[in-house]
Each structure stands twice: as C-alpha cells, then as structure tokens.
Length: 386
Image (cartoon, helix red, strand yellow):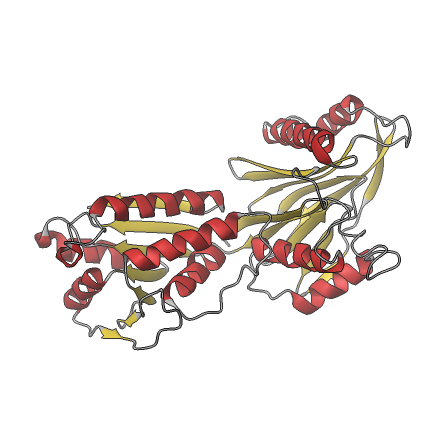
C-alpha cells in the first residue's frame, strides 16, 4: 500500500517574548523524513539560538545518514550544561521515519511523545539508554495508516500552572483531550494546532513558557487537480480538458469561462449556486463529475490569504474549514486533504476582465504564490501552463 508522511507544528511564544525558545526542523532525504523539536533552556534570544542550532545540526546529520546514536552522542556532548540547574541548554525529540511508518523515535528530556492510533492515544514502548552520560529513550516505530506521532516541548505540560490549574496539565489529561477532539480525517497540522490552542486557553492567552507541538501522520496520498483559466489557443480546449480529467483524484475548476469550457467539452450542464455564504467570495457552481467549481481570481485571492494563515505556526485558529464559500471549500480540499496538487493554468486573456484591475499576470502570480505555500505545507505541486 502506498503511504506518505504529513507534517505540522504550532508554537506559542512565552508571554512578552518576541522569539520562541523552541524550534522545529524538518529534513527529507529520499523516502526518509527527519523531524527534530528542540527546546532551549529558558526563553528569549538565548533559548531561541540554542534550540535553532540544536534542531538544524541534529536534523541535518541524521538526514545525511550518519548513525543515529552517533548523532545523538555528538549533540549531547556538544551542548553546554547550565551551572545553576545542572540541565542541558537544549532538550530534543527526534522522529526519523520512512513513508511506510518505519523508523525511530529518540527523546532527550522532552515530555514523552504520544502515539495516536485507531482513534485513541497510547504510549510507545521505550528503551532507556545512556548516551554521553545522559539518559535517552529510544522507540522503534512501526506505524499504520492514519497513525500520528506527537512530540512536544514542556510548555504543554506546564500549561495552566498557577492559573486555571494548580500543577499544570498532566500528560494523561493531554491524551484524554486528544481522544475527545481528534478526528481520523484531521491533518497533522490540524492536530498540532488543536493541542497548542488548548494550551493557550489554559495559559489564558499569556503563555508562561514557550510551547510547541509537532506531529507527523502516516496517510494515503491524495491527488487533486485544478484547472485555472482557458488556454491561449481555443483549438486546444479539448486536449486541455482531456489532460485535466485524466488525472487521478479530485477535480477542481476555477473561473467562470474555464467552467463553461469544461461543461462544453464534457457535454454536461453548468449550474450556479445563488447562495452567498461569504459576501466577498462569489458563489460556487456545479458540473457533474467535477468535485468543486469556483469563481477565479477573487476566490484565489481569498484562498492565498487562507494559505498564509494556515502556514503560520503561531496562528491558532482551527485548521479545518467548515464554511461553504468557494475559498473555504477549496482550502479544505487543498490544505487538509491533498498531498499532490497539479495545476493546469490557461494563459488566455479573459475578455470579461477588460477594464478591471485583473489580468493574466495577476492570475499567474496568484497560482505561483499559492504553489509556494502548498509546497511549504509539504505538498508535491506540479504546474502545467497552456
């Protein structure tokens, strides 16, 4: 069975700090993905520098196929120790895994990772090791489809201390919360945001510590194809639509003229909704066999705004989209469902846009910016121009 890995993270800065003392780094090398979450001691600039160095160096070494134990030992021996507290200046969690869910989890002084399996949270079997004079835990990963590995900094278990909760949020309570709120169809990004948002609530919007949650989910690849704009040569309409429809997965058509071309080439009827769930986003349409039909440039503009917000690790709004406007429906498909996205971009000048501040260059820029954001989400993006 073909599977792939999906990644997401969310962070809260300690209240009053401009920089986060936690850092998440991700590297891919062939079929293998390496994620490191490092937590610098304390907060502010010093913690940010130490966690950044730890995560980048460790992630790069492991991704370059250097022996995992050698990497951990080198990092532990390199990290300075706080003279006052006797603690390493940076702690870390490492996930090193292939697309089949096979690999290793290494934990050094961070809260114990959580496995979300079959709708419930559980523990990984851990082996205690001594590396460089420090206690390190290693788990062998053998994940199944829809399993999620969740790693976190200690700001999660400190959430609510001295405020809503006397002694903070226990790991058991965190697992119970995830059991109640995580749905099987949620992305790794949605899950990490869900937990970080709950921590922020317990902190009453004033985090007492840097708080970071990172997740990797094993899932099936999902392909989505988008047709945006008509081709330059009208004689190419048939070929253009045929290539678009031949792709596997979901099909989305953006733009009124494009929708009419698809309807004409397929012999189907184009119908338009009269509902306006969002007054700033034009209504959607319907063509039999097409999963979603939207207006073009205005919907793409809103979609680009949603993608930037979705990418922000500090934005805590839910990462699932329940509104029924075209941009929200398309965001749910592209951000939450898709792993592989293919754009078919027609470069013909739309006569309906004459006299308006909309041109072909704007449409192309919107697609390119959106593709950049989708790649930053970990999607595989391909663009065909006609």
